[in-house]
Image (tube, rainbow, N blue to C red):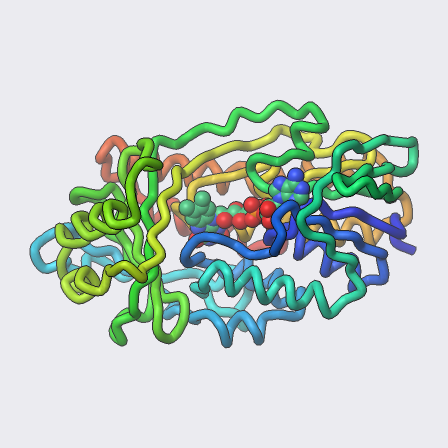
Length: 377
Ligand SMILES: Cc1cc2nc3c(=O)[nH]c(=O)nc-3n(C[C@H](O)[C@H](O)[C@H](O)COP(=O)(O)OP(=O)(O)OC[C@H]3O[C@@H](n4cnc5c(N)ncnc54)[C@H](O)[C@@H]3O)c2cc1C
């Protein structure tokens, strides 16, 4: 018998949706609340490595993901910031989700969110949007949640999957120092030239890291990183102009891509941040997963993968044990920290190298991360 009958999931992002699906599939009664009126994701494209795809496969949505996204060729292109955009290396990508899944898939973020939430809707999960909790009252074996619409519910467990600025984490009194890594990232959606079938990056040039990766048959996302700065005052035209200025400084495939950066390119700017909560990740019957407890720059594209794995491991522990106690939740954080910590350290090492214009062995570090995440979570 599973260790719980009913659960409240706070947050309908990648981690929350995955946790809700896995528990509901096993017969647990799931309520999911999302503060936004709609469960959508902003942003451009996202790169999902094999270990993320392994969890999405377990959620029963791999077919949909593979149809909507772009299965990339199993290698990463490294290009030089020179007049030809010379291809320096083809770095083989590891199939970290096993031989039956590709090494890497790119997908539009809102599309990924829609597929997850469509799967949620197929299950008996009660989804309430435009809502959060105002109070969580802990009893020895349950939590009573008071919601912002005045309603109340009592649960065996509350899962806080409410992202990097987690309300649940603050509510539990877990201190979080979210650090800017010093890098800001520009991203935009552009048409995919037929020749671009995998992610390519260029370290150096006017941007610390410039790159692109296909997200479906027709589109890809392009990105540039710069010193993190306040870009909030820029108009849409000015934001596009920044991206264009970067793009025009790169060559090879960029000569084709640059002119396709237009008003319709959905330009986004964010800082790369980092944070890792030391365990335990729970207080009483409230546990945190995903970006609420760890966030990292996407320099090895593992953020969403780690969030998905958290959901999968937590569900496995909850469904495979008949007692829900401190030992189970302590064990969850210990198991996850052993995996998340080296991944975050690798992402930060890459940022450190690029900020210092140092030629660190990035392919070696990527291979080390791949070795870690190929193991089952
Ligand atoms: C620039 C950038 C690029 C990235 N690229 C990649 C990549 O290529 N590959 C990759 O694997 N990862 C990438 N990541 C990381 C990835 O986006 C995150 O790790 C992942 O989205 C975390 O999922 P989550 O569900 O924990 O949090 P989120 O996706 O942030 O979801 C949290 C959800 O909780 C909701 N919420 C918030 N507060 C409340 C509340 N009080 N009550 C109810 N609901 C609430 C939010 O509205 C949201 O829906 C990138 C991140 C950034 C910043």
